[in-house]
Picture (tube, rainbow, N blue to C red):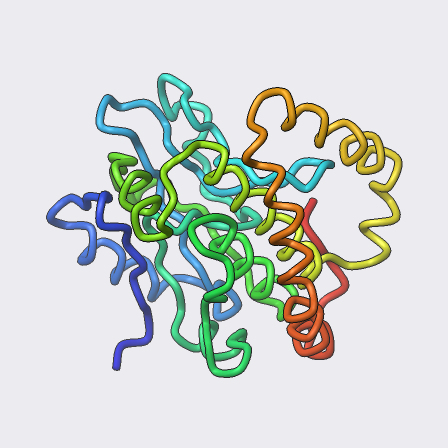
Length: 236
């Protein structure tokens, strides 16, 4: 088995020399780099992702998404996480962060599973490196397919998964001291969000019920994840 594993969405596309360039690159990386995040573009050339960031409300975003060009993201640097559309992971890291022998949490369908993996890796001391010289394209054509797989077709149901998975990842990976530091902002956000969802996407409110149902398993995984934490650092 190879030392690196390529995660690729079915609606992502790679140039012919991507793997060759990636293999040349990984030989030069420090041993604590567990993930390589490529520059991911939309078919029209706009930015899709240059890594994942998390704001003070613990919402995850693809950095630079929708910007007309990647000119502001040409520097190789560490990022919090890599989107699952196209990511290169060190096999040693995947084995190190697996919970109950599973690398990906099957309870996190469709959303936040990539953040969950990278966050667990960060807690174990692994770095995620954004490398803009590696370029992939993402058509973002998989959303309807994911809805069909879930047996759901409405935008509200899609947002319900986002609501649920955000809470479950926080329950698994968030450090209490970091949570306390953001508490004033989080309280305001959590108080306002149900009213916003009720007005704009009532079906998304089901995400709170789903989160409550998944919380016991998330807390069980938290005990495993946090007991093996290698560094005192959460998402910034």
